Length: 604
Image (cartoon, rainbow, N blue to C red; front, side, top):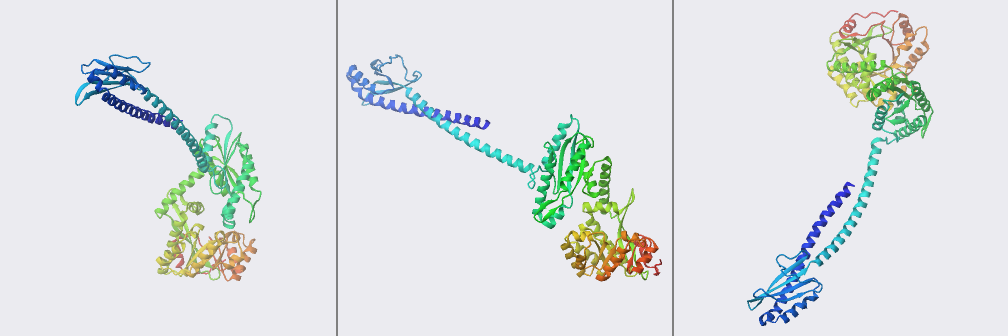
């Protein structure tokens, strides 16, 4: 309406200007016409004035009756007296009409009458401007019709424009608030819904339940079946979740494989019931072109206002519950409890402290010795990492290594340990220690780094350590996560002369076919199988040792803590062993002192 009013105002303003211009043009044309008539009549009445014949002059003036707009014509003599007059029928003569100041609606023109330069008198013609008014009215009518037509066109164009703009706004709103894959509300719309639900719930009874749902092993579907299949699975999961919740509840997709459900419930039991229905719906297999897929999920639950006072706290608390569900085994529902906030705060503080420790190089490399089971000689070490926290003492690797993995700090940390381990072993050589190998653990994040092989070669080059003295320990789960990439890296590092070992063998996705294709040097028996020896576990340990022998690989057992375990491993043909019985993890200086002592047989 504002735009239409502006258009009307513009047309009115333009119309007023055009009407004014037309008035001036029509009046000028009437003035020119009247003056021309006056000039013609003045020439014809000159003789009448010269001979004093008013009758002839009157007849001449009467000839102007064909001019419809003429009202009066008056001829005056040289002395200024009226000589002859013509008044149009129906109009009275108005004495005293001044040509310089005519009546309103009249136009007066004065023309001198002369003969051969001699002034004889003057002629005055008074013309009505009714014709101008009529012309202006017609022009105004035409202008009004044209303006009305223009306004109609403008109105139609504006209506269509508004329709297009409204459609574009709806499209933009849809794109801004809708997930393109599933058609569900996206993160922005979901959070807005939650904010509105909390704002509208402040004076109500009951609770607002927020359930965060993270699909378990969704990456495996993308990697094995492709992203298109992953999108199909996401759409099916979205439909399954939507079929479980009630109509007023919201299901949104807030991440790659993460969904959120927002529901108003009477109490915690109602929220738990919704969460269990969600888990049950996802336990049903989903059909893809590549076959059936089970898309189990981890669910974190938080209630407003029972568990958190606002939107930010609700989301962070639900995320903490989700993290607990994933770390607790997945495929389960975990409700938020206040202790989770303390754990999250502790983890955040631990991350901040770890970053500072890495920047200040406050972490220490420790080394656990490895011995030959037959001779008792020290043959190598495993590089481990210890963190002496200034306030908390030594922080367990089981606590800070997962934090480093999740945050990506493990890449920088692993690079530092690799350089330091190679440098320490090379320094021991110069101080008379026997030629030891050093085993360094490799994380999944490191293996995915494009220049990790360059880091390995740089550590060897800088320290001067022979490549055959470095052994990289890889876990089975790490190798199976990306078999093709792992094989590429393993072959490249073996070409460089570096040794490879599979750590924690038997606890992951053991596969003889893959084991045969991996260019490894050694298998490491996990401590789980060693701890129960010799009473139990000897079947698996014997099988691992026999398997290694069949593939021409060396075997090292970790976690040896009792003499009878070492004796059994020695009798079973195990090559090397490490554990608290043989040597605790120790600083580099202490390890050097141990390595330079005369070798003695390891006794059972």
